[in-house]
Amino acid sequence: MKKTAALAAVILAVSGFTWGAPLKCSQCHADPQRLVAAGQAIGKTLTPKQVKALTVNQEGCPAHMGLKCTDCHAGIDRFPHPKETHLKNPCVTCHRDIAEQMNHSVHRDPLGGSSFVLQCWDCHGAHGIFPENDPRSPMYPYNVSQVCLKCHQQRKYLNGVHGQGLELAGLTGAATCISCHGYHNIQPANAPGSRTSRRQVSFTCGRCHAKIAEEYRKSVHGAALMADNNPDVPTCVDCHKPHQTADPRSARFRADSPQLCGKCHADKKMMKKYGLSTQVFSTYVADFHGTTAELFQEVTPNQPLNQATCYDCHGYHDVYKVVGVGKQKIEENLLKRCQRCHPAATTKFLSAWTGHYIPSPTKYPWIYYVKLFYKFAIPSIVGFFLLFIATDVYRTYRRHHGGGGAS
Image 1 (cartoon, rainbow, N blue to C red):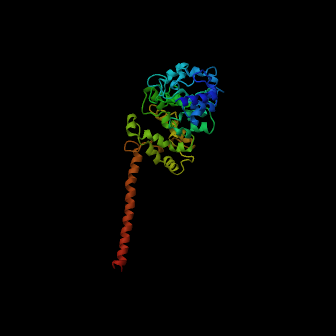
Image 2 (cartoon, one colour):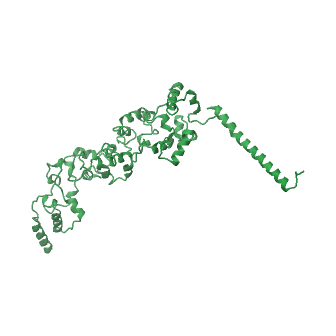
Image 3 (cartoon, rainbow, N blue to C red):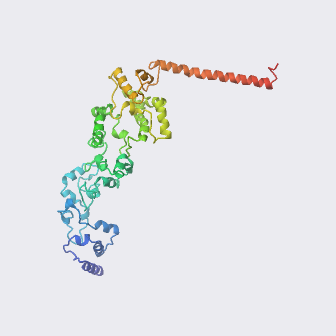
């Protein structure tokens, strides 16, 4: 014990320390070699990672340049340092308002104190704290995703249109994690006040896509959500994935859009509530447009599709009800849609469309009975000729091998 104390005293003396005396933090924390010596003085061998973490660069901390080390690290003004002083969060001393927000967020302290699940320095850094508009800050748009991805397994964000816009195109205005989820007051997705809750998500997306968000809230989907909090209608993230958000201008998104709409519109239980046809997808893929679209999706999903998809006729975000609009107005609007691809189309052109309903004796009866006729006529005609051919083959066989029929 005496030998250890003597050795420590020698190391401290050589390093310029006095055991138990006041000291300047920079004596150790600005010099990695002195940090190693200080560790040896108290019987600890610091790893390179620990040395790096304990080495403080005093340059460039504009947010806190007026503070002394002991303003944050209270009680650490002598060597060796008191135990467990590093466990306290000193940020709450000045940032009580933010601490209050944190204690109402998903990163809150279970006991309502200052030991948050995610500590301040995990996001902002410990000493080199810079304003968020400074490229050196972890909260700068380029750096945010890497901070959040240390804990959250959502790397698919980097493959989405927002992540690629930021990482590849350098668009600092592209949405980052905090653009959608918030900063200190991040709420669970199912919480009413969450930025990503069903009622709020259009407002969150609308911070960048204002015109589209406004159109959506006026549409049949958005209006039902805003007025009745309808759980059946889609929100932004139901059509555009929240993290791996595909570029809606891409050929792949266009080719996949019928299946996207069909998730809801082919649901019998859901559509029954609103008196809508559940054959919306099957009737679409059965016609010329849908058959071609299906072939494109299977064979060349990344090639531009030259056939109409759901949103070419119904709109993108501005989908409105047809109930109460009147047949004449509906036909006028529909004809305008058709004329985008078929300039010579007239009102007679519209009679070819059955409105996503399968013909029946009560709905489109002429089409139903014509199809019914062919359903029986074609098999009967084909069957008759097959029977005729079979009997002729049999007669020929008997004539040549049975000795009958020759004269």
